Length: 418
Image 1 (cartoon, one colour):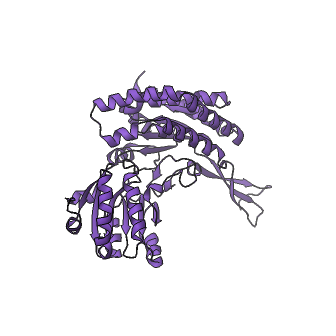
Image 2: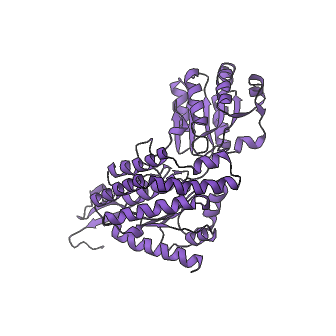
Image 3: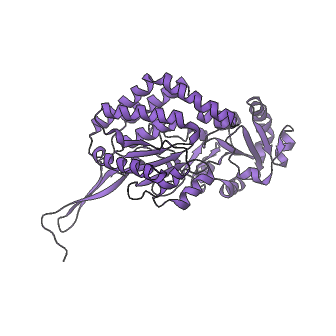
């Protein structure tokens, strides 16, 4: 069977399963999610063994430490995956929810109701924990899903999907509702992007070039999870002790993910106090600082930033730092270089905080909080498919409700159009 035929068969099977899944009750779907959670916990040792094989291959190919961190599973991360599925099961079921109802003068009763999308194609790179999140969210929303993970996590993902699909079957849900394209051939991605007969939405999650390729080639509507070039701006009226902790968390808590800070902007009025206090803690954590000339004067160990640094998503322990003259300059810098995912300000000035939330165009804007909090789980959404930088049809963390659409349900008693 060729690549296109293989992908087509999986997409067709997912479409058939989606019709049955759309009619499943909340109880049946929640039972399936709990079975999936138990399955991961029971097979944790097997998952770790498969993940070690993926890690060995990745190391032999010279992948970076940030890449290896994204690829690595541990007992704690598997437990987080299982917990995430239980949290999704505990969420309200959006399917069938009536959003609004109104009656027309001619007696027609019109309702807008939430329904599943159908089949979601999810294309993602090295993080195998995302496999369980994506499958769980799609099942809760009544969607089948076709998963295509990166070749570097093939063993981990294949086993995780097998466990999840068997768990669906135990709960009486068609196991075909979770499909996995288990070939490393890149043509499989292009084949999936052309399956508009069976697939209703494509969600790409990966690097900027990869997402651009998907956007250019897909005949299926897409919801982009683009790069995360996130900023933290320390305002002149910031609590500097708070600013140090927020900046440190935003950069080092997990640097290889999209909501980690890549650029720190510091108002000149507080730079001479903030940077000498923050820099040693960043260096202690292994961070390389690349700074503007004024930063270099305050942090001699820093390297000079090049023009391209302000546009680079490092996904590593590297941080660009710029001292700015004003709030307006900080906002202008974010507008010029930000990716629209998450931006933060640290300030005690109420009006400036409000201006920041109004003037900065991003999926998430934060006041006095780390960008690392921009996450479906942290927002109480159970888990997320990713953080959408698109403006249609969902923006920010994509959870269960964002994986539904709406339809109009109209009741009449013989009305016709005059």
